[in-house]
Image 1 (cartoon, rainbow, N blue to C red):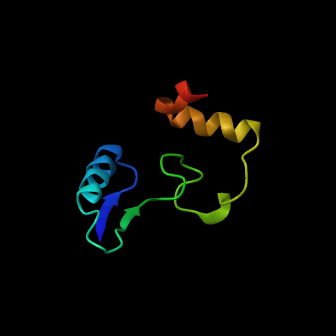
Image 2: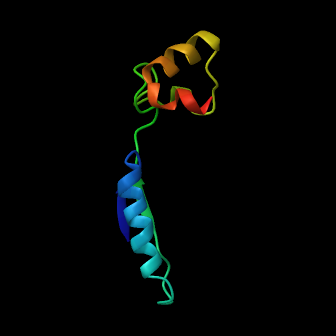
Length: 74
């Protein structure tokens, strides 16, 4: 069993490469990723309230303002 911080893409890539080296041994491979719901958005982080609920336009703008590294994706 492998572990990774689900918010750290470099760590996740490292564990995925390691998992590939374990293939063919006849055993399942699992990577457990620790994550925080709503990571990086003050009103969403650490709460299940937003699970399955889309933010309204104002909430979306507020959330995206807190995550500048994702703005290029939209």
